[in-house]
Amino acid sequence: MRRSPSDALLNIGGQRIDHWSNPRDVLQRLDCIEIDLHVFTDGEHRLEDVLALYGSRIQVHDVQLENPRHLPLATRNWLIQQEPIADLTLYLEDDLVIVDPLFLDKQHWFLSRTDEQLVLMPHRFEPIASGPQARLLVDGPLRPEFIGHFCTPQANAVRGRFDPQGDEISFNITDNPHSGCFVLSPKQVAHLRQQALPNDGFVSPLETAVTLTVLQHFPVLKPAAPHQGFLTVEHGHPSFLSYLQTFPHHR
Image 1 (cartoon, helix red, strand yellow):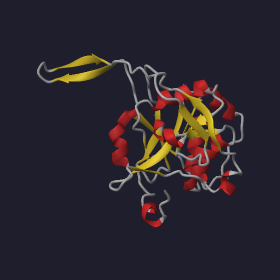
Image 2 (cartoon, one colour):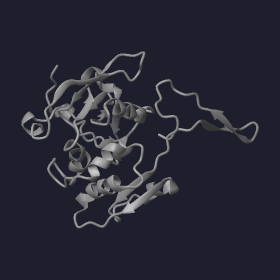
Image 3 (cartoon, one colour):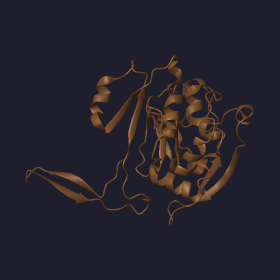
Image 4 (tube, one colour):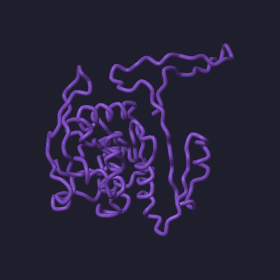
């Protein structure tokens, strides 16, 4: 996700490093991106060989808890209280993969367009190796009697053009706000600092930390079905694909 004005090129023939300028994508809202990355563990169940690959690029935090299931809550609390507040604050579960190079540009555009009053979640998917469909979107509609406790879903609540030359994108107040991540503006983080953040109430501590934290205070939207590919993240630890065999298919 890092972005810089130039890239380094290994010039084999000249035995030197050249610098190539990065042409600006016309859809970029952010010219330069620097990521400050923090990983939280319980101090015991750590993939040391994986963490070592990242060296100084990440900062590892070991949190001692009576209940290790509360680690997501401790992570969220630390993130919301950090100074200075980042231009974009991103909470990400450890099994998600961002494959869209414009992911942060799209978040920045959406937050600016909605005056930082709304939160945009991506569609989370798992690749399907064979069959007529290529992906399984894993966060489909929740039961109305459950989601009704938290929000009132609304189709086409917001519309806008990320690409001035492209189609208008529709966004729904979603009937399943969970995506395993959230992105907040400085204004939104400052607001959450003044609130009592939830420790339970939405499935488990994991979903509470990443979803109810924002759902309690902001409408949560996702791209509508015709535009579902506008913002996605890959669920890198596939655990939902078995439902393709156990649930009936509805067309």
